[in-house]
Image (cartoon, rainbow, N blue to C red; front, side, top):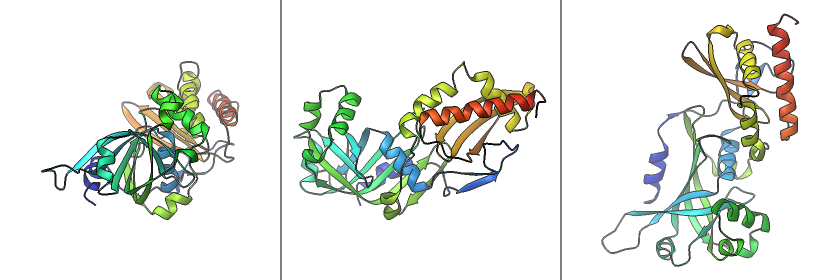
Amino acid sequence: MRVAASVVLAASACVRVPYPRCTATAPVKFSDLADEACRLSDAQFARTVAAACTDATVCTALDAPGADGASFASHALYVVDDAGCPLLAIEPGSQSLVNLAKDRTATFFARSGSSGVAAGSSVALVGSLEDFSVDEITDAQLSKLSAASDTSVADVAAKTWQRFVPQRVHLVDSIRGAESWIATSEYAEAEPNALAECTTALLSKLNSPKYAPSLRRFAAVYASTPDDSLDSAAVLSIDPLGFDLLVNADGSPRTFRVGFNMPPQNEEEALSLFMKLFQEAYERANGFM
């Protein structure tokens, strides 16, 4: 498709490797951690990125004199349906709608923020747009976009709604520095990160000064790193299967995938689990275990 190249190529700057379902055995075993650290599938991660964002760039085939073959990029608010298809709120009378009157093919690109859910990761969809009725948008979805765009619910509802139907799905995972293409059937059937809505709050708490000593101690024990050589530690992402831990020791950063034995299903369960990990690390560091 003509509109695919500009966004997909811009999103493709990493080594093409798929998600490993599980990674290496934990350096130091903890009672609440799995020996092998599993993670979300590519499809689950892509669905998480798509669901976490509300702003997208949509490229359509430009319908204008002398613009044969050119693509036109524009901003759109969106939410996703149960199959991960973006439901786009497009300004009435915009150039994008002019373009779509002639050619329904398009490319969709969304990138999560630098912190929070799937930090800095992106998803690009190549497909087509179809008319969609605002009557099928829930009040909760309209309120979400109203808050995200600082406009009224009525203004959001008054936009022209389109449903993006993907034919190809591309993921860039900034945490692992990897990218992959995903089958549309797998993308449609995948469940996003169940902790997505509370991830930002969890990361803010765990990486705050309040928990910095506990997190640093856990990282030192888990990674078998002497405390005096550990420069910093941070939790990069969290999902029901585990979390990604950045350990910077002697100026050399390493990222560990840490797996949970029992998947937490909400913020309270996840925070409680980390408190147990911090307590065990304290006991290990002080020779109580």
